[in-house]
Image (cartoon, rainbow, N blue to C red; front, side, top):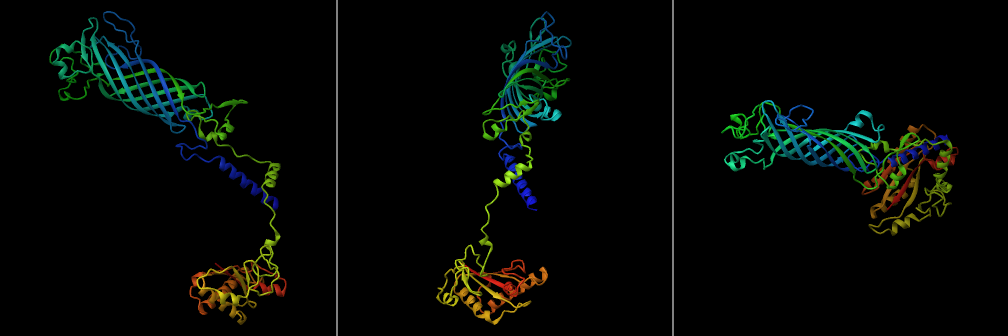
Length: 503
């Protein structure tokens, strides 16, 4: 049994140590035992492409210039992005950037356009690699899908193929049409519109700080004016009052609103090379040891490094519980073994209620009234000398009972009367516990000891105790003997109510 108890003690200690290691960071929005780096900043550059009315082919841009063709190539997008990883699977990014767009269409429009734009948007990101492959595979890779909302500011001008004559402008307005000097100039004012960006990003972790990747994005713009053309309308601002149709929008009911024609809203996108710098002090990168990915827990515990939430699931940083060997259990048990208890704490030789360890007079006569130090006192004199309102010292006394009785014997009347007198004069409190000898069942003995302690409390009340709320009672039956239940004298001493007067 001792070995079993020892085993449970050590295992409990091990659980406590494990729980102490795995305390979650309450300031983090993710669950994990260690602080992690979560911010990053990216710069990206790559070719852009327009999708709308003035687009010759859906996917492949035209690359020649002649009388009926205009190159759609040579357009670029550049930008920077601030990223925040909220959890291992979810994050957010703020993007600002700009670029230019080109496009042409021989059929219907016989036009081409040039546009410059700026954009700003915020998007939510989802760790697609983590969802599809889990946190333990492709550790150097990160794949995100994202979507959000933003604004785009653009200036676009459409020209006639061959002649290069200006036909339409994205900033078309009544003021512009009344200013003939401005008609032959390209768009000069930015037009603002909402956009909904969606995209896919893949990155490879080059160093603890740097990632290299690719970013594909498609921006859905809430207008058809991005190419200075409204679908189905090839007219020019030189074609008369309704020429160009950008101001009118192709619909008399939409003269002052956002122009929308007969085709889908404009879109543009890009594919860019990205370079990401992961912010945060003392960055760490998971390493492979013996064919397995391993984390540097020594650096984590010492605060000498931090992994980035972009690549590390915090659950992988929870240390597995250590299974101790029997030798380790014995070693831990010996190291944590408490000091031996002084046996005098458990012995009360004179049965006065004070253990021999604290008893300065361990051989007081039976029935003595003693202090908390086990020293016999003249209780009558103590009560007589007590001052009103004083706080008394600890005083111990016993009231004994006959076998199977809860009737107070006359020889204890004087003691109890003095207790009442002392409590009425001072601020003393009284703690009483009832006991019985072993000669009955546990249930019966507890009930008997309860009757005995209630009898003493009733006597005190009838004797004039003013404040019965300062009396606390309890009953232990035969569970706390002070003498051997195998002797007549021991049985007599165990049939008792213990009185303890306290400050």
